[in-house]
Image (cartoon, rainbow, N blue to C red; front, side, top):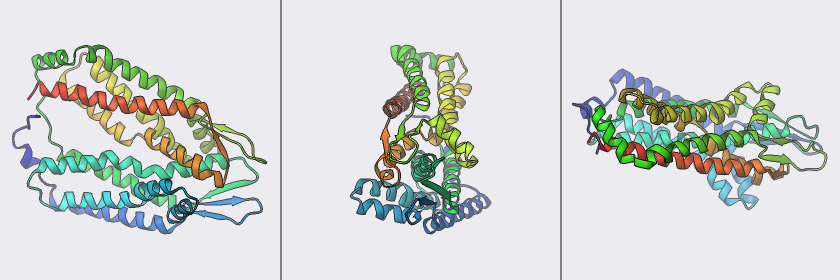
Length: 347
């Protein structure tokens, strides 16, 4: 078990009243933005000799269900419609309800922070559709205010989750140098070889996955373009969709890279414990915001639901991306195991 600092339970019990007012006001604004995003279209799709199609969350769910893609419809309902509201309501409860055990509130808020990035599922779907329609004369897309409202609401909720999670987080005591030596001995071969190998494998697979094409247009009268993560960002930038190009770059490139660098430094360099803890906190923050897994699910949805608009076929890069996601997730489990072993030395 982790040893709490003196009076930690009292210190993390509650925010001050002004802080609560500000946070609740931000939650209310995010709830309002989420509600408006359900009523305002995300995108308008123009197709030659076909009526314009409006892409909005409720209509997308109905279309998926009628098309026999019930699983896809359920995923969109859960991640993009229900969970954003549930998360904000959960944060309100965490702020306003007095908890007998502050550590339980901390675990609850950290869970909300861990799951927050999955609300961006439909945003990735929209970005992929924009990329596929770019440069085509038969089909084109126009971005509508709904998607910007949705992104701002999800971003606000993720920031609030991090603020509340860090305020309510019980910190373990920093091990002494002798305790750290014991901890590393407990890791054994796993700490010396296994963990560095997983970090290296994750870096290698992610580097290849973002460079290889993941899907290709395969439809009559359309250019048979193939797209990777890198070329998707370039396409969005070329089309002056700067906001989405920055989002994709940050969530699929910058943050995963930052996490891997922080983990490599934390576990491979001879650092003092406070520095190592700071790097581990940075890696955790980057992991919570990175969207590799979410992008993989969005890619699957586009391959399934996007066929009604643009027929695509899967490319080899998609399988590499799947492997990268598996290794990336395995790294999360390995790091959790290592941190538990090291913290056990300070119990």
